[in-house]
Length: 623
Image (cartoon, rainbow, N blue to C red; front, side, top):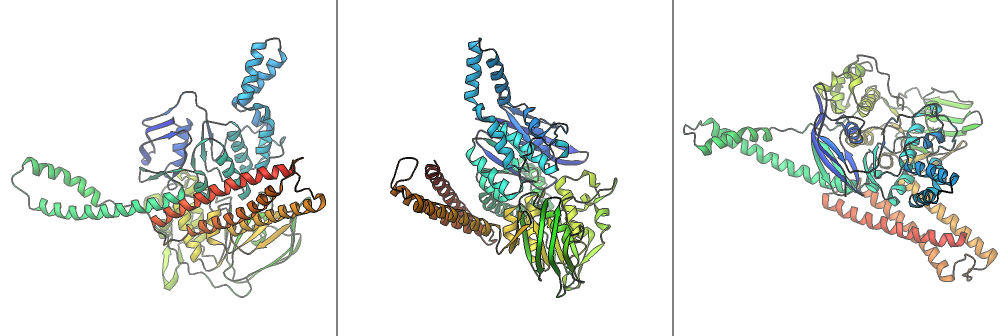
């Protein structure tokens, strides 16, 4: 069943054409991701689809009676309302049904009205609405229901808007970077939510694991052409490689045909027959195809950074708190050459504060931070850079340097650096205020890198960056010889570039975990299962009633199944992570990726089935 159709829409700003004559449709139960470079107009497409903006051509048609919710990157919320009031002032059908039911209860003599209201409550499961919205707000760390919107951070506002969108239970949910401002636990919860809910999705996101696990179709906007891939992100990667190979072959054929036709044209045939005239008319099209060039730039930065000395960065008994909230409690660590550290933890546990302490932008209450004489920090913060009115892209980068030294005595100019980060010569002379959010982030990265740091600190660098730029950044970081610290909720990104993690648990507890994010998740899952096994063993010893099938206890065979399930789930989780890590191998061909994608789906389905059975047995134990 078709829910929404986009026909021949276009958008431009002056001479800049974002896209033109774009068409596609969305059917019920599809979960579609739109992939394109920053500045290609992804957000503009979402705004047109949701009715927040208009197209210069064509139209958007929606099925009569369907409900659409749109999560914007920067939601427009009433600052005077509280978190809970924001939930209750939305145009939510469930709220209308609850209000109608409350009125019917007050006028119980009208039995018809009461019956209709009661049936509506049953149909929408509105009885549990309060529980539902409180659970979702709790998962999104918005438990202070009376907090005013005006006091919330940008990330909290985004999460509140996400809660509203989910509670609205729309037929079609449009999402613009839904994982921005969510910590890793929230993202995994959202993945599970979308897996169990029957909801149609159309989203823009750079989170590749999220794409892989949530979406069943990828639509790529490339050079104003739409390409559709019926599969997840892994399938898209393999199919796109195959498409690029086909295009390269076709372009080579076009070049050969062009040379042949050019030779024929030069001979200037005197007899202009119908056949020769047709051949002349076709020549222009052949020439265009032969000369077509894909405007893609691969970044291959080889920075010649200053050497790090023996003393790099030492933290001795560092303590930091805000009022009663402890961020660090006598934290010790000495950084060595080439360290690659990822930092994870829930929002509010002090990750950004820690980075500010390292760069001595914030003071500590106890302990000492010692920075080596040879250390040159490159610090990419979430705040970005202030933009001066009337400033052009090239002017921003030149404020930080005209060139950077490369290996083997070479150097790269500010212009060349921008080109490598996908800003062509024309774009470099655009005003910064015309750039999209992702393009500004890309420009900010350039200002950090042109300073040639040997200790790079990146605080959420993946927010608002397109997948093309993320691949570029990953390639650079893999070759970066200095020290690296990254705070990111992008699990794919973290898995690829870090060697170990600082896990911020809160209340001043920071653990050093020797592995990447997927390793950490396996470890955490095994701990939970071990705790459950210990709890079960303890229950058996104290109550000795495992044979009793009454009173909510498991039979002997169910106990065996329960324990076996825990072991099987753990093995499957480990196998799943091993498979996911294989996708990062650049030498995989399309067939291998397709086979891995099928195997990964089978394992994921098996985990879900066994986990569901485990919960059934677990509820009997607890019940």
